[in-house]
Length: 126
Image (cartoon, rainbow, N blue to C red):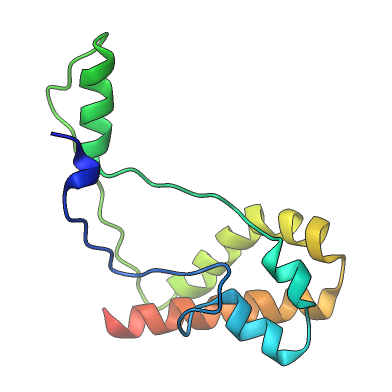
């Protein structure tokens, strides 16, 4: 059975564009007048994290390997993790953001402060 047909539950969805939800990048920056709508709409970072079922399906379908045991790690954040997670996101995202939106320190500060706020809200719910 194709794992894409299985119902998947997501704990947190963070939208990059579209203005959907409180975590939406577009909703939280576009309306603050910091970024032109055209630039927000043309920014896309495709990121896909397959489920364990999808990984197993693809490996078995390809046929060169078999999976005897597949484990996943659950990441629990503590009170210090919001800052650390935002720093990790910044390490890969800041060069992409600077290249697309320009080297504006005020904008980068707003983006990564918002990122820290999002992680703090996630931790408060856990």
